[in-house]
Length: 258
Ligand code: BTN
Image (cartoon, rainbow, N blue to C red; front, side, top):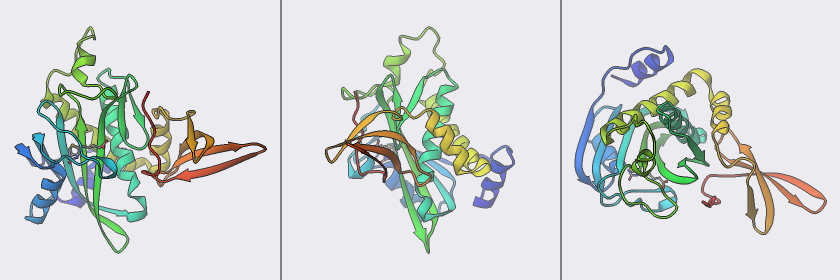
């Protein structure tokens, strides 16, 4: 299935043709492997999934601890999105996955820009990588890590620990979670293509748990009021006698967990 066909299927709400899933036991990073697969001539869209990663990539150059038991998955796409809209990939992916998981009874929220939050703790994250030519994104890798039954730090949560306290459990395996995640990204991409970024943004804001929170920026207190269509955080700063609105690009501040 080529790019035009995927886009047409998504726009028209048609059934998506099956696409390859490359499965690995252990890799450095499913994002890195996906670039290699593309360079070797494997046509997107495809999925790369691994049981563990030895050099998982996180946001802002961090590493993503990736022992067995977690979901480590990347989706590769051909794209034609203006490079200035690179943040849209993360917005639609995070929103789509959250929607899909909510459909299975999980009260998922988002933390700007791309953390999946469950009961106030980090359930997973998204690391998007792109290739651009002359101001247009031509290819993108959307890498998703979700804690299934792997050990997590204090600020994290895994799905199994949440599900064991639920009366009914609709997600019964890591494979099922992988399918839901893939469907979530496709759902988000479809919503973005058919409804546009403004509609996506207002839906994204509805499940963003950061709106209304107080942040401290260079000693000045601000309140998070939203997100721009470029994926920047909108903050209203309050200094005595003045109110200023500023937009912070992803990566410029890190919102803490409680
Ligand atoms: C974050 O820092 O919150 C983003 C983490 C993204 C991790 C996933 S795991 C699958 C894919 N491959 C990687 O190397 N990173 C992403």
